[in-house]
Image (spheres, rainbow, N blue to C red):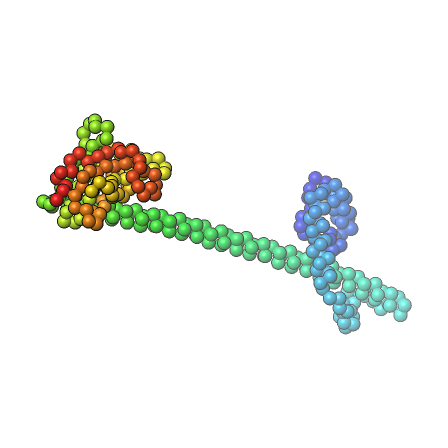
Length: 284
């Protein structure tokens, strides 16, 4: 026993007192030096006590006692000796029955606990699998939403490109160059006015993106007053294509500029970056 640990079966039998005396003494000596085995035995004792308290005590029938005594070969000497022997045999039989019942109940309880733990582990695995599937479904849903939004943006851009192509093919469309306000270099884009569709386009390239809180905004002047055609932002490559409807009641433009404005600014207040060089072709 020294240097070895007791088994679960030995712990259960030690807890209900069904071991042989020699082995029981050896285990008792081992438990005095081994905390791990003491914990195992303590757990078995708790289970045995729980089962013993939950099992009702019943008297065994007298016939059963007689049959057991006869089968055990107990003789019937004299009345006193016979009574003493019967009492001792009955007590021994009762102890055996209690020990067997306790041990059987202990094994049953331990099996039930093991089965419950296995069921809980299987249920946890199923729950984890279901949660994993939910996470995957949520990720796929977000990906699908992003793809649908990207497809909508592409569809909108394609529709805008088609409208611009139609405008450029029309003989009534007027196009003017857009230059930097510094006056150096070639034009950075085009200002397109389509009388037939009542739409205006601003198309430019190589525009730097504005920092957060700032945006590009295009304005047209008519009758000494500036009218906004809306704010816009270039894409990652610096390309910008902004489409707007011709403001109601305006038939000619005196000038057009692109400024830097704060988000949500209702009036022109920022510095001018670009201007339309020649608007004479865009007037009625």
